[in-house]
Amino acid sequence: MNSVSLIHVIILAVVQGLAELLPVSSSAHVVVAEKLLGLDPSAPAMTLLLVMLHTGTMFAVIVYFWRQWRDTYFRNSETFKRYAWLLIIATVITGVIGEILIKLIEKTAFRGQPKAEVEQLFSHLELIAPALAAAGVLILIAGLYERRRANLNVNLQDVDRLTTQKAGLIGVIQGLCLPFRGFSRSGATISTGILAGIPKLRAEEFSFALAVILTPFVVGREALRLIKAEHIQTAGALRGAFTPSLLGALFAFIAGLLALKWLSVWLEKGQWYLFGIYCLLAAAGIAALHHIGY
Image (cartoon, rainbow, N blue to C red; front, side, top):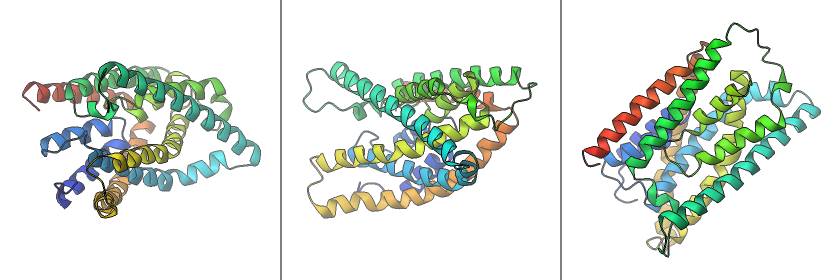
């Protein structure tokens, strides 16, 4: 982490903050930025920085959505219990699917290697490009589907539209996102909600509520990975890795608030599909970068 300057942290934080809360895969954008800055995205300290940036955007989500969550999830004890159950179901399914995929990838892609970690693949642009393209296709399909039914009078207070089955499906899709940089978590989960018939703003609220629950587990996983890394042997070295990450989280928080406002405006105007087009163009750009040697 010593090779990462303050300006590097700020750049990555702004990229993360803007991209994380838009359905365009913040991880893909941060990895590309790290590549262009000459950093190693698969290094333990860099993956810790990435998840700390996620933490910054998580707090941006809490600040931005708190009033909506209060009105939706905390109206009464019955509503709170119902949504808490849906969030727990989706999160547990995400954890099971994600862990199975991660172990499967580590045992197949790194067969015979003693310290195989899925994070070793995070710097491979040739894998990020198709994952981002897949997210773009899903977003595009959901956006066009949403536009086709835009003439229907959808009651956004109809909480019964989010069922256990639909929450479970969103959890499955979120689990598929975990091992793959480029397969946008927010893009995939919101799109899945739209295709399942959930009102788009309700799908957005639920997707980011899931992110708030998931982020602490991801941060803990990467912190343990950093501690176990061979080059982190002292408390001072550990603090040296965490300090710039905390600063990055602050900048990511500020950028995240701006991105959330942009996302909500595009959702309200029925322009969700435009994010899909962007993902496809970005995937082509990332593939080009890999072709020229990044």
